[in-house]
Amino acid sequence: MHEIATATTASPTLPEQAITASLTAEIMHDLDNGQPTLVAHSGGNLGDIAEATPAQVLAKVAVQRARLDAIERLAIEYGGATSPLPAEPRTWAFTHSQTGETVPVTCMQGCTINHRHDSETPSHPVDVFCWTDPVATATLPLDTTGTPEDYTVLSTRIEVDPFATDHSRRLPFAIVEFIDEHYISGLDPDGLAAVIRTVSSQLAAMRQAHAELIRIRAEYMQRPETQA
Image 1 (tube, rainbow, N blue to C red):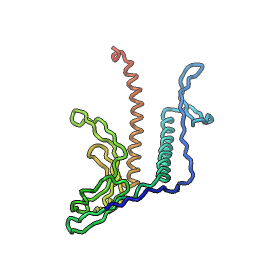
Image 2 (cartoon, one colour):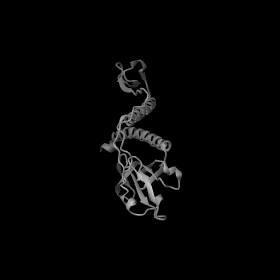
Image 3 (cartoon, rainbow, N blue to C red):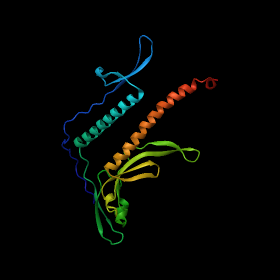
Image 4 (cartoon, rainbow, N blue to C red):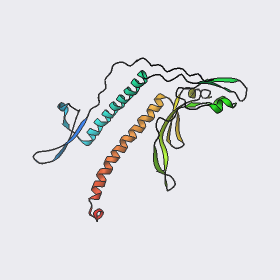
């Protein structure tokens, strides 16, 4: 039998706090000679306006991006603390395939497996698990055979294996699918944070490559042989 309870609302537990992210970059032209100058300052604070190199601006961007990440986490935490709590997890039972024992199970919150097969057919406990649907999915055309095909990239879900022989998997953990059928599994919150930091650093490198690509293409397209 499944037990479903009415949702309730959590009491706010977050302390008062403020996080600010602000940066303005400008290209200004000298009134006398027309030479461009790159300047940067905190939005609305002209007191710290100063000429900057591209590397210095990118360093400031990294700082602001970290602050934006903190603002995002704050919004998510606020939503979790003030939104109605989800209904109580389902409770059900299955028959142990070796002992015949009836084994009760309470699902992880957010579990999207209906467990009908598990509850109607004798199962071994290690084959019973819960998971959530991926938070979001995206695909990119990857070429592994000479013809690009769409592959799922950077998909993340939460899973728990309540009867696993590896006791670390008896607590909810994250699984990151980098591309179809290529996973990092068993990530606790710190482990997932480390993966996020690694991916974020690679995104920063990709943004730099994007800027370089624009610059290099612009120069290349100006060559006489390209225009011919």
